[in-house]
Image 1: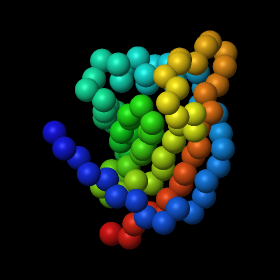
Image 2: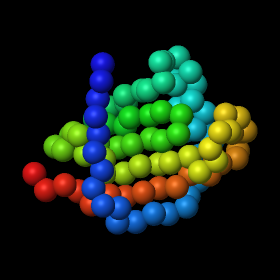
Image 3: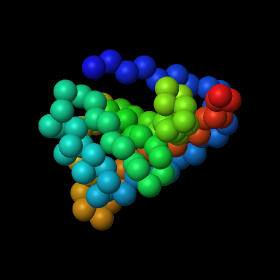
Length: 99
């Protein structure tokens, strides 16, 4: 299955940390796939698309447009986060596309 996602102009970029439990669970699930994982978040009407370098979030209304991205700022490092630590990520918010 092929899926394409598009990005609008970036409106904010923040350094932040992803909790180790979230990071470890995502990478455990990713290790069982061919490199990409689709996770529906029904309560928010969003879908998360995960890969090793980035987690993107798309709205249920504008399915092909990235609204939020969590990008791993430590590239090339496959080490798992230890319990109680946090993995460094950059959060990028994008301007929603007008329907």
